Amino acid sequence: MFLFGSIRQTFALQNPPGPDRFKKIKVEYTAHVWWVTRWSTNKVECELTVDHEGLPSPQEIYRTCGQKIYETYLKQPPCLREDTTLCAGFYLYEVRTYTAEREIVVALPSTTVWVSVKGCEEAPLQFSFLCESRPRLLLEGEEPLPNEHVTRIEGEYDGQPFSCDNPCTLFLNPKSGKQTVRFWAWSSYGDSSLAYTAQVRVARAPVGDPERQYWYVNVLSSQWRGPAPASCSEIWEAFPPVEDLPTWLRTPARPQDLKTEIPYEYLASNLIAQGAVDVSSCPDAGRNADGSLSPCGLEAARPVVIEWQNRFDALILEVARGSGVPAQMLKNLFARESQFWPGIFREGGDVGLGQLTENGADTTLLWNFSFFDQFCPLLLPQERCNLGYSMLTNDEKQALQFSLIHAVNASCESCPLGIDISKASFSVGVFAETLKANCAQTGRMVRNLAKKAPGDVASYEDLWKFTLVNYHAGPGCLSVGLTRAWNTEKVLTWEAVASHLEGVCALGVKYVEEIAR
Image (cartoon, rainbow, N blue to C red; front, side):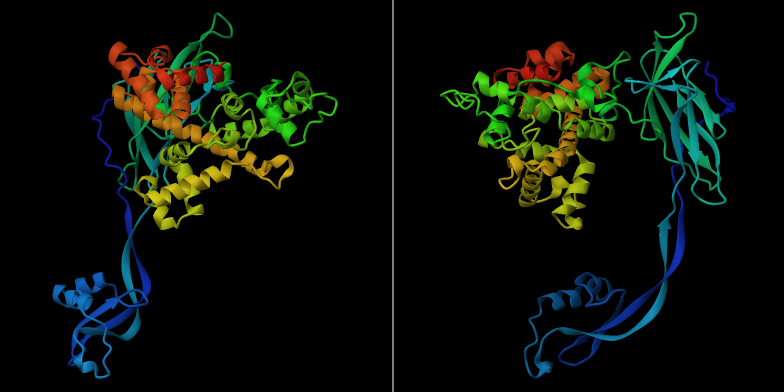
């Protein structure tokens, strides 16, 4: 039996109609009166009024004057004769203007409901709340209209209906597994909010006094008011592990916790080539006969290599906190892709800290809607961007892809060390958005295959590993691995999917293992 604050449980649950609030308002406008006049007789065949400057549109002529005049007007040749009475068709003449009033209907802001956890403390590294007493959800209705108020909050939890005053305190069941709460608010205006859902997990926490019981609580909902959930968890409907996250999926508290001291040879070679390292003490100028770095060159570059590979740590941490993408994974990915050298990789088509390609840019623009909405107007007219990436022409898509690749390519011949540091810094956020796009595409593939939420068939950690395969090897490889694992074993674990990645796709397995190391 559930316990609720100020609740009434004996009632027939009425499905919410949703928002239904509109208002008629009067606005002034300038009306323009036009005559459609025949050239041959100067006879006015039609009078129409429009609410804008300039000629009436063909559609306006059609609506007011009918199909016959519309078709004649569209097909008639220009009137170039001195004697205009010999011209065919019609001409338009603006007769007058006047100020008019009309009614328009506007939608009023609707009631909404927000979700939070009550009486619990945020648990570090868990994306969870730690509760010393039975955990509770707080559902708070918000009515934006003056002189109106939320009358009650209703919903369903674990198959049982509930109705309570606003705000509503809902005690959670301390049982394992994902639980769904559906809820909405009724307003004195006479309508309701939308029906919202929250995915909730309550897990026993092995901490504190053994004589007392503690719980971890996680919540996923569009109406959540609290710290941001683990990255991509909402897309996947997947909760992170109850225990601490693996190190590679964490975001530490301080930039220095991301520090590494790895003797990256590719990074060292670029720093030597750009004159950032003094190799005058090396008898071989720091390089072997085949052009590779010599032990002396690598050792000479070591201090600069260590400084360079950690110069983006504070920015990575800032981006991770803003985007939710784990900071350690982001740094590991940069290490694996470019060794932190943010230019063009060996004159290939991969650029930037995360080595973006045309296909990678396409994925980012297609699957990360919020990023596309911000990036597209920088290049294309807003009305084209409003159509969405998938509806653009191939030329427009290609222009956006090239622009995005250029934005993360920090190669710069006139800059110190040949690198535009401002572009390299900007690209950290772009690559975080690219990873979010890949997790959305991965989630869609899993959902289409299993016909379930990704979090119901795969763990949070494994879903990130699938996402890295998608990022590195592409959706074709990931789709093969997912499909074969599901069809043959009916499971979507990393081990199962990895065992079905063959040929060039098998390179994705090593890639994931290096980043998750």
